Image (cartoon, rainbow, N blue to C red):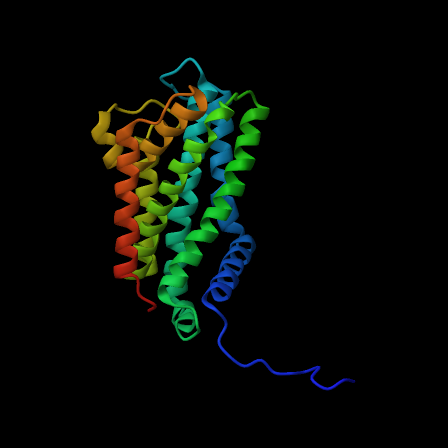
Amino acid sequence: MSAGTFAPAPGRATRGVVIRRQIRMELLLTARRGEAVVLAMGVPLLVLLGAGLTRATNVPSTDRLGYVVPGVLALTVMSTAFTGQAITTGYERSYGVLKRLGASPLTRSGLLFAKTASILGLVAVQLLLLALVGVAVGWRPEFGHLLPALGITVLAVAAYSGLALTLAGLLRPETVTAGATLIYVLMLAAGGIMFAAPDLGTAGWFLLPLAAHAEALRDTLTTGANIQGPIWLSLGVWAAVGVTAAIRAFKWE
């Protein structure tokens, strides 16, 4: 055996390496949680098929799939980036998992970035699968407008992820679960996802980010129109508020 085969290499891993490994770990843990998979894919898929292929709900459009599918895509983003992440992180904090991570080379900002990046990756897979199901049952999206749809979705993920991490970093897990679930149900009921909802106008987009995101996806993917300026502003504000709040309020324990 030649000399130097087992040469030690002491030293701290670089910030990039630490964050990449944490992203990988977040994705692996998510894949192993059966309830997270059901929440992330099962519920949106049932809503898409139930509301998109039947007349169980009233939609304000003659193109039922063109209305329902973009709404379900927006709902999936909120389900994963906000509700699922808030509940999971809340219990990780309660069980002391985050406290132990705090003793590692992973910084607080690194953890927040890793969680948000892993959610982006997960959301990308979910949206692709749901979009394929939508196309299979008759939805015909405007593929030439994918770029603005992706841009507005990244803003939505940043907003929901920031708000989720803020709640998880401040409240007890039981309170986080109740609060995140209540917000999810209220957004679903008032956001015009699978049935007609009261038209609140521009103000509604600032009050209900889910409604703003769903309308943006309908504008781009269904009608091929440009996303309206107030929607960009609304989700931009929500993203800025969510990320800022998470950076300032998130705690390891």
